[in-house]
Amino acid sequence: MKFFLDTAEVDAIRELNDLGMVDGVTTNPSLILKSGRDILEVTKEIADMVEGPVSAEAVSMDFESMLAEGEKLAKIADNIAVKVPLTWAGLQTCKILSSRGIKVNVTLCFSVNQAILAAKAGATFISPFIGRLDDINLDGLQLIEDIRTVYDNYGFETQILAASVRNANHISECAKIGADVVTAPPAVIKAMANHVLTDKGLAQFEADWAKTGQKIV
Image 1 (tube, helix red, strand yellow):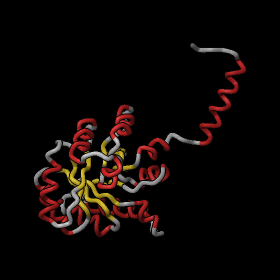
Image 2 (image 1 turned 90 degrees about the horizontal axis):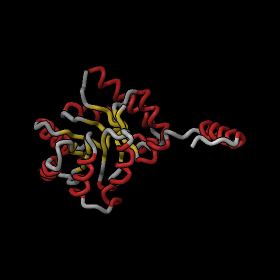
Image 3 (image 1 turned 135 degrees about the vertical axis):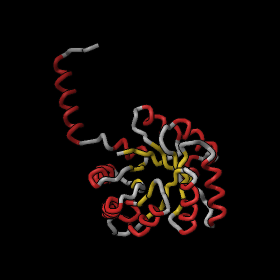
Image 4 (image 1 turned 180 degrees about the horizontal axis):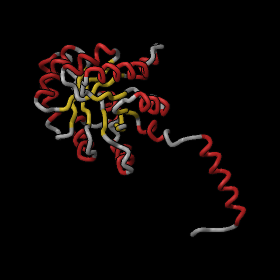
């Protein structure tokens, strides 16, 4: 499974990237706002740092403007994946950009039908939002599983990029289901290392080691 970081915070990306934990990055208008940075500047910095795809989102709603934005974003770096919403304008933009060899991440997916349309439009990635479905008492993980089944049935090459990931359990469940990628905030990736029994074991080792009176260095 590939790990993408869902952030525009350069320092957080660098920390995990240096550990080999980053296969790509996803950004969106909200994350750009949070970073306080210019979208073109910060996206370029991230793309230069990370080898894998870096999603940069077009923000216009109409096809012509969305396409123009996508074309500009794609010129930032070779590893840019233009992010478009799952609307007809987004699908039109996806079709044209993907036909030109530009990676496209179709976002805000909430149904299998939408995922099928994105795959047929040539999307590199489809981003189903797990957490937002859970928020309205629907099963986000079930959507990932259903898309996996349909894509495998028909040999669609679009990668399933599980998004709106809220906790470490979401990540492990997506791995079991067969999501190709998960994108999550850095804190959620770090939380995967946590376990109460690990903490308990370390506390016991530390106490016993102190009793030996020894030092290694």
